[in-house]
Amino acid sequence: MRTTMIRTIATIPYELARLPLRVADRGLSDRLPETSGPRVVLDRALGTADRLAGTLLGNDTIARRGADRLDRSDRVVSAARLEREAAARRDEARDVSSTGRRRASDQRTSAQEKAVAGLAEADAAEALGKREASTTAERTAATRKAVADQRAEDRASDAKKRKARADSAARARKKAARTKAASEVDDARSSEQAATEARADADRLDDLAASKKEDRRKD
Image (cartoon, rainbow, N blue to C red; front, side):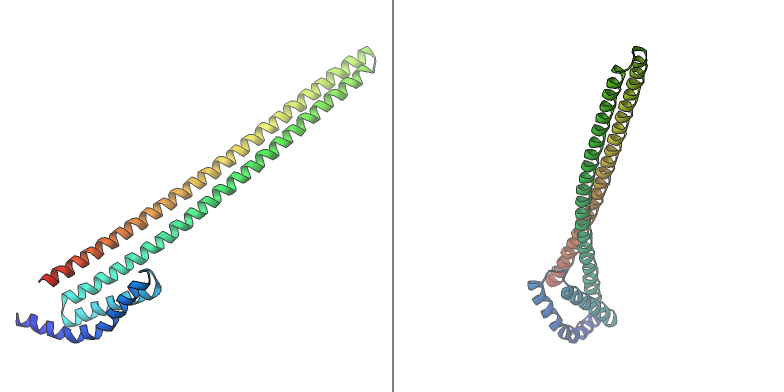
């Protein structure tokens, strides 16, 4: 009992010296968010001072108060960092998705234009072959017509194949862009969830510290 009283008396000068910092902390808490630079610096200064003073004075309550403040400050800073990372990932995912859609649309349009041009070229070749065949002798006309028809058929087939390959490539790129965007969104959600959990831990720690402080006040 006597030892406890001596330790309590020994802490009075420290608590008095600490009072201006505590007043400043209360003033900042009304004006600045807890993740702001000045509040973080002051929180860590108070926490470090309490932990050191509690250790030197042999006062577990003060030491624990300092440790709790430092731990809560770390959690708050970590939660803010995770929130910023989650927001950045969400923005990046939106940009990737939008860029992928535009690129896929441009490629699809280009492929369609090339396919149409190929079909038009094939039609023109077929018509030319038919006109040439009709002006020659019957035997030569039949041969040339057959050759022209085959050539037109081959070109049309090639054009269709090119169109099919271009469409397939465009669909594959669009699918890849969507997959990447979905992965980025999932990562952003995971970071956001981690930030939420970190904030929840910080709030629980704050509540625990407040509860302990209330218990000490009642004692």
